[in-house]
Amino acid sequence: MNKLRQLPNSALLLVLCVLLGSVAGAFAEPVGEAAYAVGQLYISIVNMAAVPLLVVAMFFGLRQLMGLPRPGLRIGTMLMLALALVALAALAGTLAGVVAAPGLHLSEAAHAELGRLILSSGGDAGEVRMALFSQGTLGTPEHRFALTEIVPDNFYSALANGRALGILTCTIFFGMAFAALSAEQTKVLNGIFESIYRTLEALIDYANLLLPVLVFGTAAHMVAHMPREILSAMGGFISVFVISAGVLSCIALATIATRTRVSFSHTVACLRAPMLVGFTSGTATAAIPHTIEAMSAKLGFSRGVADLVVPFGAVFLRAGSALYFALVASFVANLYGNSLSLGDCVMICAASTVAAFASAGRNGVGGIAVAGIALSLLRLPAEAALVIFVGIDLICDGPRNLLSLLSTCVVVALASAGLQTDRAASAQPSAMPHRDSVVVRLAFTRAQLAVVAGCAVVAASLIVVMGIGVGAR
Image (tube, rainbow, N blue to C red; front, side, top):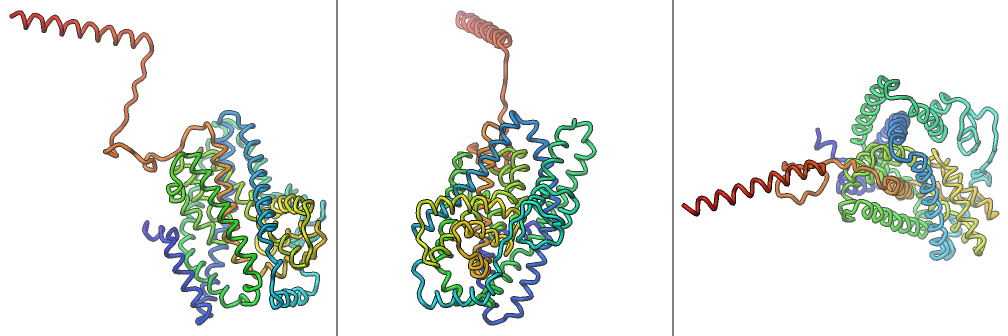
């Protein structure tokens, strides 16, 4: 069974599933659609378990963090790092959009195909409405953004509707109150939370057995339903985004390797499981258990910091989305022949950062619609973003989630500075010839050292006297 549970962590198996899924999408579409339906079932199971797991993990994280040195400063550092990483990703996307200029040198056929799609949308498919205060947010469209989504007036309503950002806010408030209680007061509740945490972790672990089926079905669905003209017209944008996300992901891995003082390859090996799950699952929450385990037990960072930051980052730290939104704004501007000035670039960077945080808890079309924040500031039609980018969202989802996950890991690595290592003994590279050998450390006070030194001098003197006596005989 253990070998079977390791199959979703095999990169070779997942690549093989992509190839077989592509063949099935071209020649056996019913098989691919069946696998795609099973994959959607997998996503539903993971999302079902991920929300309570997020809540419980943050409870434990806040409780442990309050026991660490300078918890307030450490929490502030985490928030500032999250903001800085998202802003840096938006800046990288803006620079990549200026340098590579996706959408600027499209052929006439590509322009005609994209124009046909935009015109066929009816002109209002991508409308994004922003409301600071909304009444009766239940049942509102997914692209409507309100302050009640950040701080909901009903926690159970946020749970029932799956509003991850509101759930996260309520969890932080409740977790801080929970952490302020004494250990005696929360002894029973701690045991219950521990059981729930382990159960949900096991549920996601078993659900990940369906990950190869999801990869197979997604590849088949893309091949069968994605228009070749869109793929050809958007090839430049996809290439720029994937390369940019790959470069930033490598920088994040190098930062983690520097903090742990291990090799780059060892860091990649430790984070292989969460990276594969995050890249292929299509949901940011599926890799939460693997990421916490890898960052604490394998790479040695604080478990309390990992328990708090990883669920928070899965919802809120959207560096991949910031990169994506900046490139979307650059592409649409180039598509309509608008040259980008320095002021426009600054606006794209700032708007993409805001849009990334506004997209917290949103996936698919709901996440793409938030790109309208940047487009509206540039006075560009938001319907272009929705209609054009919905078709390639499945391709961009993997690199986007991967960059966000690794950015979260960077926050864990930097926020754990000066804390005791949580690395498991079996994960540490040992330079000793025997794995079972134990290092014994002796500690003495000054008085004890003086007594030991005196005994050693007396013993040495007796040995010398005895040697002289033996030699005299």
